[in-house]
Length: 453
Image (cartoon, rainbow, N blue to C red; front, side):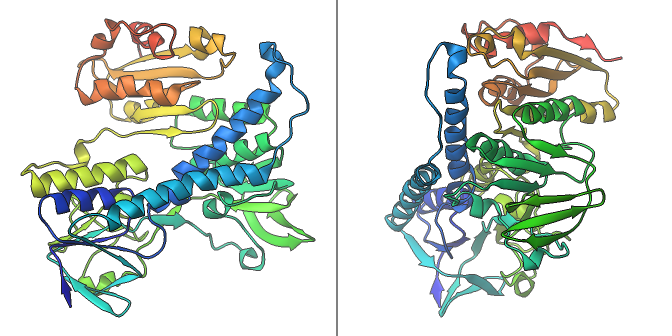
């Protein structure tokens, strides 16, 4: 049996950084990765998808050349080059992560599948390892629904899509949320026919209705077919493609993308042997310090259900490291969550939606401004979308904000930082932002606050 001070299972966003902090503090660390270094973000998530989004935006802008006085010829898409560019982004980052870990002093890297034998003992192939501190950083994967006929047809997940080097004739997307919508717009811009099927009444249901509707209109204007309140009864193979049977109609497509959610990679860890509790969806139960019910075992990243983003996974590492090595008492509940939807234009979001704020019973202030009032958006001829901010009328603290528009994924940080500083919205009112930027409208936005009736 090999003994270490700490074992980290998974080389996703939180794992390598934690290994660096622990080894820097003089701890011996074993990091186990069963497949690809870098986790979801590097291999099948953020990095390859945003590389693909960039290619799709380039194609879209090229087609709009005449709007800017630029004459172009026929626009064509070389999907093999598009895919190769995205793959290079992944491979470079994956290699950097692996090289960093393998060259890290006091860090032993094992490749293989880790499984608990006891609360402080794991098997990795024929190796047995033990440590007083164990960190589970195993991530998640695309959810595959129990849908009649699905096992009889080929289907795609996000992992398959980032490796696809061909253009589907008609891509049918099951799920009208963040992952599905990014691929829908992307492949429509590459030239595919695209249909999005969402069983709920609107797209991205966690957002406010005005945001959902605006995003639907953006996608439909580009030719994406959007079906909501659509119940799928079955799927089947149809010639060289697939057929999706709804209550009201059948949809024939060439390819089917599953984008209905994520499932944590916890079923094959032997957690029962360690006594670690999970919820009904398979996420590992953790406290505010990210420790499980078993002392000495923590769950960080997507597998704990306390965040589904690269930045929350990294913050999990920061919380654990600060508490264990710096004598602090950091808590998950203290972070203010921000995130983005990376369609074009992107959505930057932080804190509560307006609907969530209304449910608290607080007296609220709300302000909105269309992106057509933003000079930078006008100059770029990208005026779709709007800004919205919601604040507590009694404390003047911002509760949440949304910026759907060009640069919205960056501009939202002005509000996120203000919220983290626990400063009133009036502080932003007196800021002097740079012109011409998207952020320059934020003081004007908050100065238009009105009481919500």
